[in-house]
Length: 70
Image (cartoon, rainbow, N blue to C red):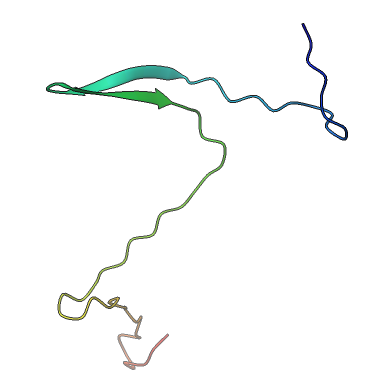
């Protein structure tokens, strides 16, 4: 049985199927988990932070001979 689509809608997007589905159990608590394939590549950047004020620690490349920033 086909359902009619609203005006202007040509296709229906379906949810991706999980590669794996299961559950994590912590004592009496059961948490359902589903694993999906990645759709795009993401990059994660980590920065060192100064303990006193929480600001980012930066490094500067310097010439060993002249001691000037490169």
